[in-house]
Image 1: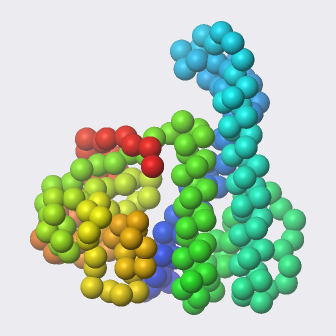
Image 2: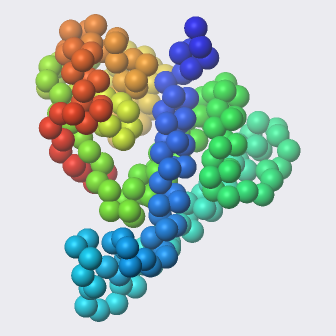
Length: 222
């Protein structure tokens, strides 16, 4: 069995969000460079120039680039400090994220550090997506949540996870984030879809189709 198959769900989520941010961040930086060949901060989606300055939108993108850059540097430094590693070296955001991905197995041994890393990385990835104008897609799933019996299961393709959006839903595992944080929603990452399907709520094929965005999607900003 591979190491990925044995990984904790939070490690799988963290790896996913790092991958998303590595892909998104260069796109965000590119938004600061006007181009006549693509819609940008100063150009409508249809290619027509806006009337008036585009400074507010450009400032929002610039602020996001700066905050994510600072956030990744601070996160890598915090991980090195907590793990007793030497000071971090220089590197771009993408290089630092790749180095963090290489430390996930060690971070996994420290649940509080893993939770901090996951929260920071997922938050930065969502902010990056928001600055790019990307709404997070949500797919409604049939069947009831096996934990609370509510019709509240939703697939989030960007997160590669199924969540129960019932705010009162709690799983029986006290170590899960749904007990530690009232805002947390219990989720099933990719490695747990078969278990979710086995609970009789819906089929594995439906979950897979939803996460591949082949079902009806409702876009939301989160």
